[in-house]
Length: 174
Image (cartoon, rainbow, N blue to C red; front, side, top):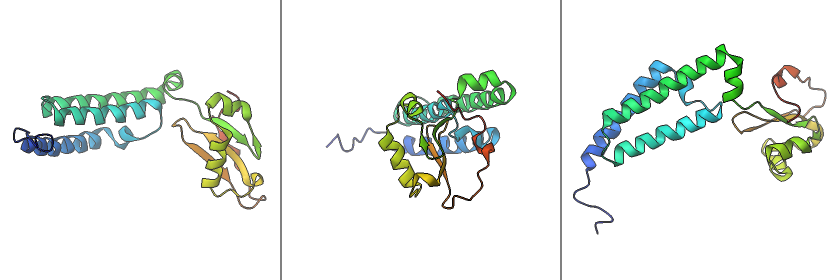
């Protein structure tokens, strides 16, 4: 029965530690800002995974709650610094962030871009279905975003004006 519950398990410490880490994350996030948990870049994703790992190791190992909170605070501070550097220096942004890639230009599927992004045509079509696209003529553009998400820009009426500014900074070729 020890594999279900061991009397030596520090359950009380885990409960208190969970509460303290939760409060620390709220406090630090309020200071640094909500941007810290946004999903804009690959490093944002890596950061979120790292925070989860720190929380897990703090609550299930001998690492102290203060140690875990300092590690989380350090990572949040680093995201704050990197977001500032991205705004201030375009080269930093280019190194850290993926540039969005056009997958469909109007009703034309850009097969070379799909191949470069390692996306199958069937996956693209699934995204079109999710966006309720009934005909390729409705599609204005499909973009692989820097987050890895796929955005489908479409209209049910072909006469609907499409603002090209929505494709600003989107690569047309890999």
